[in-house]
Amino acid sequence: MKRNTTAIIAALAIFALMPMTASADNGFFLGGSIGASTLDDDFDGLGVDTDSTSFRLTAGWQLNDFLSLEAGYHNFGIFEERLDIGGVMTDISMKADGFTLGATGSIPAGRNFSLFGRAGAFFWDGDAKINDISVATPEDTNLFYGAGAEFKVSENFSLLGDWTRYELEDTHSDVISFGFKFRF
Image (cartoon, rainbow, N blue to C red; front, side, top):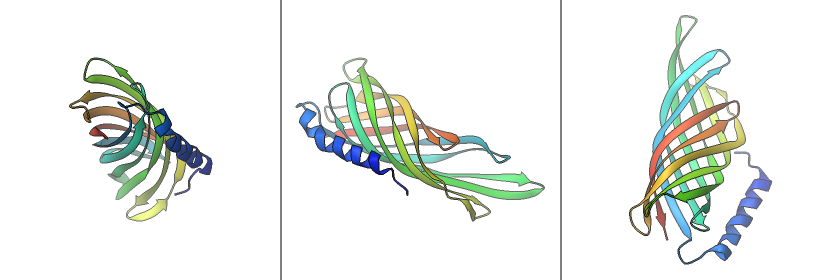
């Protein structure tokens, strides 16, 4: 994958400085989620409307009750569709995965419940195939943004549900996922 060197250096600097901003209630966390990703677009006259199972792994630093920074890995799974192209049934598959770097802002909405919004950069690459022949291998850096809710089960463990939109060059994928966050 091609990486934006400036963004990677900035991310390393942010993560190196995070311990300086920590208080006793904040700190390092790990998380993960699984969900459904959708792809509905027209690619050079080929209308694709399909979904896939995706997953995300994250690690970050909770700066305070309202802001955290995180890095992660997101995999969309494989989008597959069978299309009739000029009377010939054709199998199309597309996949993409990559790394995220972003921030999450939270608003407490009760003792154990909060709402959040997130945004950041998605460094990704992909592969598109027609009848198992690779026809494109895009790679890019694009935005992602989303919103969700967090329910704190215990001091260290939370359950999350969210929607996130990942921009992928000229298209996008919406992901609805459920997951967890574990604070150390």
